[in-house]
Length: 362
Image (cartoon, rainbow, N blue to C red):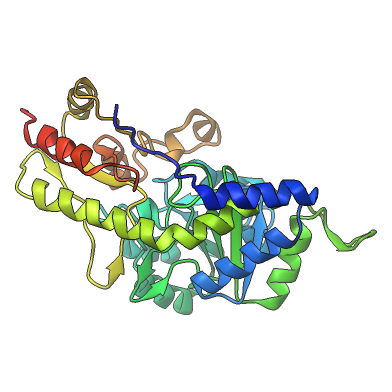
């Protein structure tokens, strides 16, 4: 089976993990600091706060932006559940806005209509889905017009760019995940980015029990710290991220060329001046279940990200959200399927995937 995801672990990761183990300082320390500094430099922000995972990153970023009980936060319904859950973790209210059917990202036109209708929206939490940046020109114009805080969920978009500027550097705060299947990983881990010194200070308190000094706790905080062990993996992975992105783009381009004339699927849309880093290579296919079985029969793995919108999950229905709220997102959830694009794929496997997909009979 050609798996849809495969972490890459090399000699550098093993070397740095051994260094940490030999140092006997396994919790947060100099490796975490090094990782923070390297990642903020890579993304083009002043500050970076390493923490436990992508969900803690989102929660921390929202708190850094002052989100509190009953605040309204607009987001997309078409993402992993952690995006909306992080809003609920602040006791705030998620307001869902539909997606652009071509990019799968939040639709700026729908966003403005919601901003006109909903009063006192405190923040907008956008998601750069599958490795493609949102339309940042349009969103920043709306931020200027309506005055909301902007948080970027970049958990799937390490290294993605909009007009040569990396995602994670546009908003008041941004969140990244280093889960094992991401474009770079630490097993579990996360990072919050900001350009605001006060936000950085507050964020560091949030992830460390609210500490201001060793024995003084001035705000409500959590144990969201990253370990030196995880950071060591992250340091090594970040050094290789650009080469892995290049490989993902090469594979995606091969797929695009091979699949562009197939009438039963829609290949990923990449607007001009964007760098899509293809955390997922996602097709739209009618009769998806039949296509998945066909791929599996030919030993090709696939994944559905995501097979339902967030507000159709049982827990969100209990909160009062109704089916039909975002029609494009609901339609996409019935059609999307992702096929292997990770840098571990061998050339003969890429050619096999292309041949198999081209041979599919509707």
